[in-house]
Image 1 (cartoon, rainbow, N blue to C red):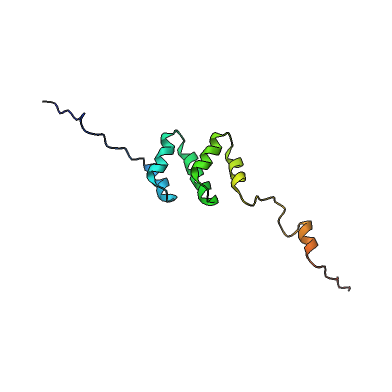
Image 2 (image 1 turned 135 degrees about the vertical axis):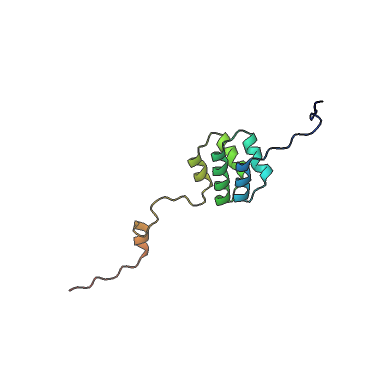
Length: 107
């Protein structure tokens, strides 16, 4: 006598990595699994959620930019509200111009 289990629905497999990412970024597990099902690697999904979390941006917008051919650096720059230009330290000419000059003491 054989048991025929074909009438039962298969149990959905739970992706442990998707669960961890959903928990880490407070996202719905089902939303994270969709990205895995679409063929994105775990590293890309994690990076998209991290950028989305940091920049308060929807992850689907990040994947749309990635699909449009942008690389991760370009995506991060596009979403950064104040790009770091590297010249914002106190030694810049503009910062020097704003400071009142003090007379030097003579010895």
